[in-house]
Amino acid sequence: MSKLPDSQGFATRAIHYGYDPLDYDGALNPPVFLTSTYAFDKSDTGSERFAGNADGYVYSRVGNPTVSILEKRLAALEEGEAAMATSSGVGALTAVIWTLLKAGDEIIADQMLYGCTFGLLEHHISRFGISVQFADLTDPANLKTAIGSRTRMVITETPSNPNMRIVDIAAIGEICHKFDALLVVDNTYCTPYLQRPLSLGADIVTHSATKYLGGHGDLIAGAVIASKDMIDQFRFVGIKELNGACISAFDAFLILRGLKTLNLRMDRHCETAHRLAHALEGHPGVARVYYPGLDSHPQKAVAARQMRAMGGMIALELKGGMAAGRAFLDGVQLATRAVSLGDAETLVQHPASMTHSTYNPEERARHGLTDGLVRISVGLETYDDLQADLVGALDRMVRG
Ligand SMILES: *Cc1c(COP(=O)(O)O)cnc(C)c1O
Image (cartoon, rainbow, N blue to C red; front, top):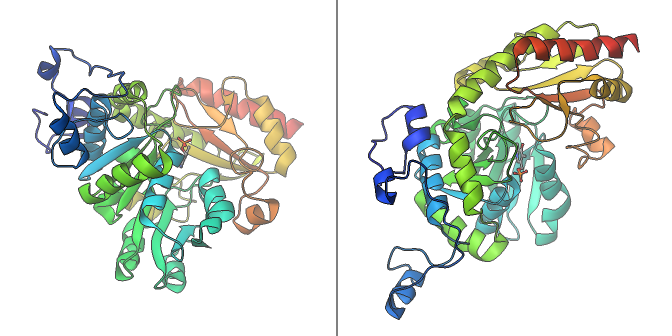
């Protein structure tokens, strides 16, 4: 399929891997296969494909040529054996959980997670007999204390959404493997350009491709990258028979388009976020800036070890709690008040009342998610315009 060896650079793989135009009449871009089903030349072909004895497509819930190109490319970028694209990031994680776990098993999860991941684990999964312990995985000693013989899976994000805590993937992976637990890392914030969890010791990587991978805020999608064996299970059990969260061919095409500029976009997101984090630190309205590139970040060294650059997400702890958060959000003019992240547009939101309202006030307090925290997904706009907008909103917030 691909004319390129695996050793080629990240950008080369992001643009070319898994697709040769000469296979498709020279079309520079992969065709979008808008088809739900596939014709068999004879009945044997169908039964052989269903039995898994012959390659070939049968139905687009379990496979589609456009989606396959995306999956090959994502696996190459994450340095995994195989990948599966899904209809959303939540669909990716639930396909993994429903496929691998059963009643009686235990998950240990970091205490700070994407809001709906937390919602699933804290409020719903116990109905299916799977128990969950939350722990502060920024200190691997906490995992050593919590882990036991029923622990089948450990789930973390790093940097964690929204307050940018860093989890040491290699240290956590080592503990997991002593206990035969699988380490799942949600790599949405970093993308494989900034961090490759599988090479650090994770077993499974999940993504919300809605964010940086797509990069343009025009789709909802997800992905899982793991061993070929596990991906086969996720596809033929998880997606096929459990959650049905298959991606559309058109969304796969849009992600392939987004990937072509992933490294360029990430470089700029990181550079602008780094400058903004420095510019906003010390502002009289800001108690604290959470960004792993700042000297004030307690896990700066771990971040520097496992990430190429420090990412495009910043969180600000504002002096003045909820009222300050609202004043800041209402004060921005260039930045957009919206959830989601990883788009060209800078997006600001208030986790306590928006993305993380799945944590109740007591849970937010316990996990350090304060009412004065605002999250900024730093976009690709001209730096000076962004700085003026954010500092202007902070100045007006302080003046009241
Ligand atoms: C958005 C997000 C998800 C969920 O992905 P969807 O595509 O919205 O289903 C999961 N994890 C993280 C870190 C996210 O930012």
